[in-house]
Image 1 (tube, rainbow, N blue to C red):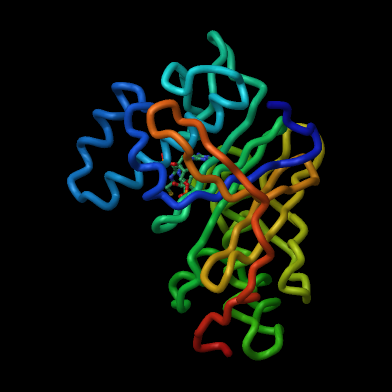
Image 2: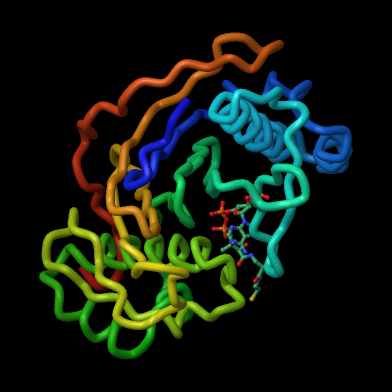
Length: 254
Ligand SMILES: CC(C)(COP(=O)(O)OP(=O)(O)OC[C@H]1O[C@@H](n2cnc3c(N)ncnc32)[C@H](O)[C@@H]1OP(=O)(O)O)[C@@H](O)C(=O)NCCC(=O)NCCS
């Protein structure tokens, strides 16, 4: 399966669909999952690893069970081909039962967030003073959604870079576009390896936002389901346009 050099593909999955594919995991992954005592988080951990293995296996024409992974300094997983990192880049995000796996030929990061009521502590952890002021200047009722867009974009950016939260959310500064469907520009943040990072955002139904940071400008969203639990074969179709539109986020600011 070939990847377009200029496009990131994000596969969206329902974790319970992939939890039965535990046999695809390596013995170490199975042992790690077995150590998670709560059944829900355990099943989600299995599903996440199974999703990564089955999708990467198909793209490489390899047995999903035999794929091997390394980890960057701050824990970013990457695929190994022989002793070297593979040219196929991936990144995973999960919230509740929603899994998002981004795949591309360029460095990338993905984040999905469940849209919930805001707390002042969350806002001051994630945004710098200028960003907070810009958000406060938004029309009443848009503050919460603009916050979640900023937060998801920052996490996607730090995951693309690989440093994660260790870099510092407040060292990243994003623009605040008026259109809530538009992606912010990166005004300050971690450097991309080649071209600048491009951010993309999609509202998923009424409860989630997805953000992708990549050096590739294109984005395709696919809904993925497993077809065979034994082999890990799967089917994917383009994600239909969200029916419920942009969610309203209750918060004290409007
Ligand atoms: C990566 C990180 C931003 C994830 O945040 P999150 O919103 O809770 O989780 P998400 O569901 O979006 O992503 C989790 C996945 O990201 C991937 N990941 C882990 N570390 C990563 C990193 N440094 N960069 C990119 N991706 C990473 C893993 O696949 C992980 O999946 P797993 O939990 O099943 O192993 C955060 O955990 C982090 O910064 N980790 C690095 C360690 C660190 O620097 N901690 C700082 C404490 S101040």
